[in-house]
Length: 211
Length: 246
Image 1 (tube, each protein chain N blue to C red):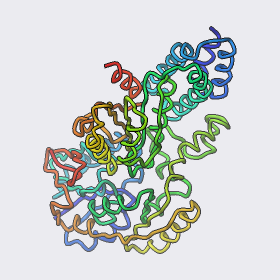
Image 2: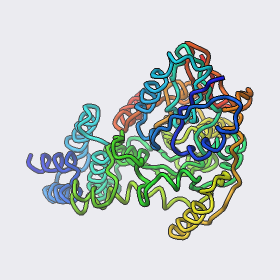
Image 3: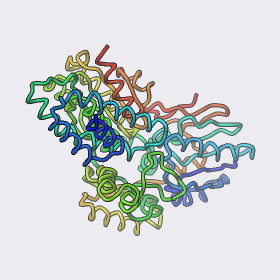
Image 4: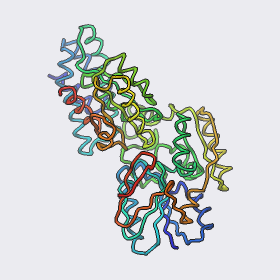
């Protein structure tokens, strides 16, 4: 349908205004939110990921696509909640203690939202205690941690240890990311997974939950 | 002994002060600041420079770098041993070592670091980008608000600029690491002015040239330096040793 193509195009081209307008039209036409998400937003996100892998899109394009997705979700989420729709997966995400960089984390958060996940974004400089509290209070399926500095990466290990000490480690999957982070480090600290790009992170969250 | 020092511009003043005091000959090659923005590209850039001097039979190639976001991980010593400070980055070197850095960092969250080189060799307002235009950023970022708006339009351009500069608003303090170079006075004043502009608390920490002195003196103590023997490569440990050779 035209609305779907409009929304798809708006997300891929990073046009938040058009994404909002297309979503409004779709809602007015009675399209169910989950249908909109699964048939156009998820596909748009896949395309954005492909373009990033192909090095046609860079971080700015990801940020703009994420913003377009968020503006669509702002309209859809209240409808979904009102309809009693349960979000399939809850994800807690944050940049670790001492680290204030959040662009990558923000991109992952907006792509997860666009993929129909419920995202609890704790922001930057998130202490292990704060991650633990969020797991206790919000009961997520996945915890995503980001770090951009090698000097803050050890906070990922401390946070996983804090989850263990609180008896919460088995309740969640822990995924990590950020420029200096690696698969080896994920294994070393007992994380469940690692991705070096935003759409990879989303795929990983999906596979972690499906497993 | 004869050393070749390949150093980041950020510590050029400090190195230029330390090198003449060494009993050894120290030839300094200065590379432009901001290589860490290249991501994996930093390593190949540095490796090219190391390889270029490898056949000259220096007793060692000294690297004026830290782990730098893993930019020095994977560097390989050819026929010449490499010496790398055990530090996460330049701040770790200039503040006096990775233990001091980690302790200060943990006690002072939300701090933006400056040293003389960070002030002197970065053009004003270019804190998002390396000093030299020729270095292409892996993130595909443009430098200024004007450039972003020119490429992405008014609304998207401004949004992107806000996103890329947002992390600066999370900071609450600026710490100036003074290193005893003549440029300190001028750079300290600039750093203080920057802190005022950004409404950050200003603090000065007495840094040191000691690690650079030890490096050019050939005092490569295990606590502060990694010596990479011929054929071995740099690996990040991220623990107490920061780096190791394998």
